[in-house]
Amino acid sequence: MDATPAADTVCGRFNELELHDSRFLGMTIVKREEPPGHDISIDLAVLRGSYPQFSWEPAQLVFTDSTYVRLDFDLDGKSNCGDAISTSKCVERSELRDALEKGPMRYEQNPLAGYVHFSIFLIPPGGELHVFASDFMLKWVQSS
Image (cartoon, rainbow, N blue to C red; front, side):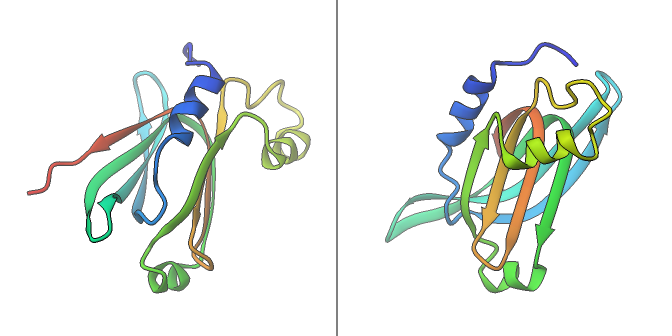
């Protein structure tokens, strides 16, 4: 794995994002050849402004150099709640990380070193997404 930004810097930038009530529209996993790895791309409609002057602007949230993803969505629940995001967060240590390192990854040496835990929670009962990645970027998409 290449050198990555410090976990507290990555998590600080992510935790400053305002994703509440933005819409989670789709997800793609992309395998890169150079440098080798996987990126997870989330298509969003990000809520900007405030009532009554607000809009949804298209964006892509990309988790770079991803190593593990766990998705638990109720697609009907997600649709019934307008695909809305409730909360999102990034942490260095978590219960899921500990469970993975003590469970399925227990025979690997420091399997999640250099990665942080990103979580996106949808309005219940929509579900949640967990990604272990080294960094992220938010890219605004030009409307056609």
